[in-house]
Length: 89
Image 1 (cartoon, rainbow, N blue to C red):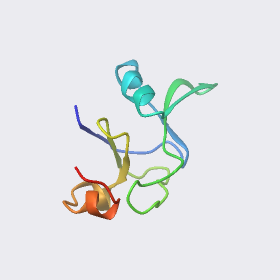
Image 2: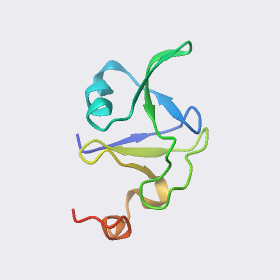
Image 3: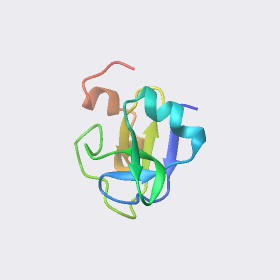
């Protein structure tokens, strides 16, 4: 499961996830817990992994379960994103 698409972000900081994604969020250091509105959240407060653009409430975004990166839709299908981020993939 390398790339997961979320259709809408809950907030600029985090989006609620189900138990099936907890392991991936923990591995990526992105698990956020302890909020009244839900049990498990994916933290994306750092924005897009390529350009740092904040993920706004209602925006779609992607979570790369292999790298832990969050990507905005502009960079999700960008074949050059590894070069933009300074990584080899």
